[in-house]
Image: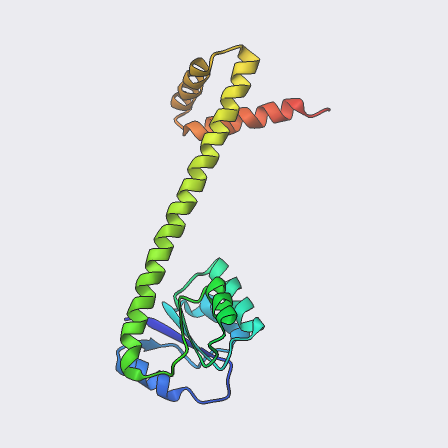
Length: 194
């Protein structure tokens, strides 16, 4: 059962939305949160999805979303009456998964939530793959730097320097990148004046 956090920055009651989501079988968290409390509530309550009801998302709301998205990303649906294209782009950049301008028809909630969850999961996989690729690239650069250090210090060829790195890694039972990190750190320490 998905845990849903409602957020509103309007004075209008959202009890109908809460009731419609509860009837669809979603676990509704406490009272609706304000955008200013979003980050704190997400950390405490750990909802699976966030639904924001707003006339037009304010800069504060978008900033709070961006902070939350950077530290604890969640699928976010935003229902708004503002169809301004720049505002929609700003909302998506802040972490909104789905931005809907037309009203909140209860029969549309379940499919909209499912699409938002699927899209969020796909984006999370892409972010994970990007992070992995960036880490692998950083490790390769580190290994190349360590090879160059060994080649200069010990007058080795590139294949011999790589073999030396691999041998140290096997002897220490660590990853090749960790040995490279040690060699680079030692070389940097030797370069510093006393």
